[in-house]
Amino acid sequence: MEVLKQELKENIIEQLNLEDITVEDIADNDILFGDGLGLDSIDALELIVMLDKNYGIKLTDPKEGREIFGSIEIMAKYITEHRTK
Amino acid sequence: MSAVYISGLGSISCQKTFDNNEFLDEIITYTDTVITAVNPNYKEYIKPAAARRMAKGIKMGVVASRIALNDANKEQIDAIITGTGMGCVRDSEKFVSAIIDNNEQYLTPTSFIQSTHNTVGGQIALELQCKGYNFTYVHASVSFESALLDASLQLENDEANTILIGGVDELGDHTVAIHKIVNHIKPEKIDSTALLNATTEGAVFGEGANFFVVSNKKQASNYAEVLAITTYNTVSKNKIQQLAQEFLQDNGINIGDIDAIVLGNNGDVKHDSFYHELSSGIFQNTQQIYYKHLCGEFNTASSFGLWLASKILKTQHLPDVVKINNKSITNYTTILLYNQYRGENHSFTLLRKC
Image: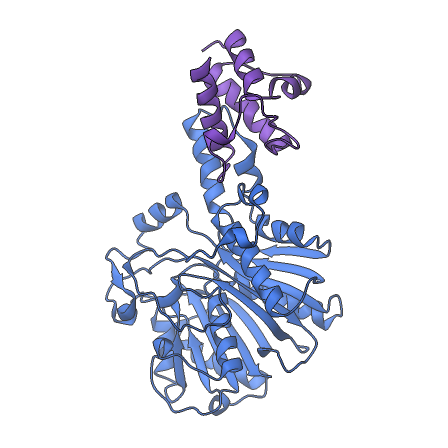
């Protein structure tokens, strides 16, 4: 799980081009959207593609994403339970 | 054409032109086939949350426009008119490459959203919260001139009083590779100080953004007045002198009235002959100026030419680095600009000191 969390942080920083953010800046329970890391709806679309491409998870309901992308901790747990690759 | 005054300007180029307190005081020389723009500290102008989705062309456009507005002491404008030949090629390349690499799967939205030609104009409007007329011209090497022409018509028809116009183009790896294959980029590295001595076809490619605040208000701080502008898609070489003469006559100007001519020579032995027609013909006794050794060739490089001419008229200083010949001019009043790329899309622009 720890390896996956590290991987998620690295991928999020790279995919979303978070220039001034390092892996150390993102705590496992930090809120990713809104007042937290400041991600927005376009980032949510990027993360949905990332889940599909990297872990074989297809999200069809946007409301589902709202819960899954709550924090790195929640994302990692969801991926561990649902990944197909 | 009604009065069009340039009241502010901002330039990001392969030289350190983003500081309006300087005027080519320090020259960067290159020995290459492709040269890239010198980055200002973008973070001083764009919030990190917005900047992270912007490719270089968008950043250059947004910041050059901000510098121009600051220079004109303006917070808001009535319209934004942008010229770009290739638009946001980096994001276009990124998106198309992703389509190919991922077998048309897993397409992400950001590069698609940011890849359109009018992204720069849109981002500037978002930054300024300007809901006025916003138009982007994509007409190869007369893209910027088309924007300037539109601005002059807007001012003439009282559709707007103050307009932000600009030319912007960025380099993209794939685009550069293609232009190298078709020999539009020179095969050998060129010392920028010897560009005019090049013996091969093709140009040294560059990138940049040059923005201007234009208005119908005459004021002492203006850089220059744009007297006239005209464009031609195709022109035969033996007609170029005649067209230049007719353009001047239409505006009541004699060849002797031109204090300097700004030429778009890019060192391409095949197509620089258009410039030679003028420089060795009717303008042989005129001060001749070139600039593409400083900024490289790109579809809107002529906007750098306008930046240069505007600076010369305001400062009455002609940097040695842009001189083709050496005439003793004591007062720069009227400057003619001529540009073309690969023998097509010619433009004449006439500027006068304010």
